[in-house]
Length: 384
Image (cartoon, rainbow, N blue to C red; front, side, top):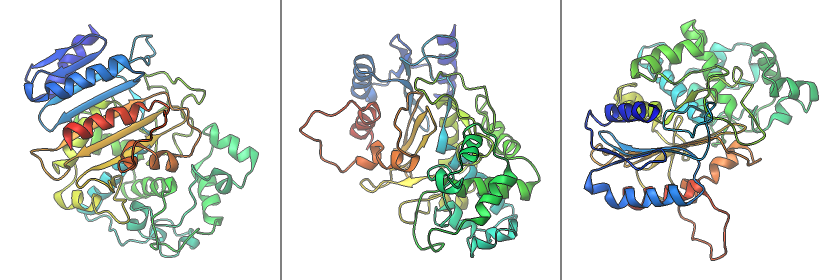
């Protein structure tokens, strides 16, 4: 029954065309002969390697591949493309999209100063909305440098881990911290930037971040399995010791959204076809400064490849778009997993993700198996 439901959803995303085959073990694929070689290698790779989680590869019109393997849902069954995950920093592209919607509505400007919306933040020192979006603020990262942000205070750190930090406490801590560099002088990844953007969205709209995402993105795009600032609705089961993210409320705008590969494809298609933001908004989000746009990063090794990673305690997710500016060749690769066991911070995780290693020569020494690199390399071989 579940397989039939997945197939129905894939057919809808395939323009109503039914040329989607099933290779058992939760693997669906295009029967278009143009993809035969790609599909054959994907089947072999997913079947014969420890590839875990949900994968979706598609164009703007066709589904090329969809699968769920080895990890399990709360039902005890193997995950499918319908399974939901914590998507971590893939949240940021949703937040940026709402910011650019507000810009189109004349309610916000890239040159607006953060202090306009947070007047008590006297150390903001001219930080603009542009700086927040492009990771150029100089603000301390509450997630990747939590010891500094929370003063290495055990009680505060425990409260953070348990999701008990309120907005008032968060802002009080933020306002007392000095900036780590002059705003606009360089790019340094910082989750705090996007939390502040979520708070600014709430101030302007007088609605919660959750309501904004639901009304402005999820409902218009039919992202029925996605949620923001919600606990308990993720269907995939974490495989590591990290469990589920508890600090989802204070992480809103930066890493709180839950979704699946089917819904994220809807977002990607709408974004790159300027349906969820205006053409000017899309251009603004893909305006890369030192490699970072607004919720998207630019590949340093391949032209027209944009991507972003996402990570929480137990989840690791990838979202890549090949040939981003060419609607005839554009392809999307999404991979969501619940087996993140790396203890490195999110910034370093993203720096070592597949696309960031694209120029590296393969080592002659035996390396630990990397499922993300395996699937990314196949996408690069056939799509780039």
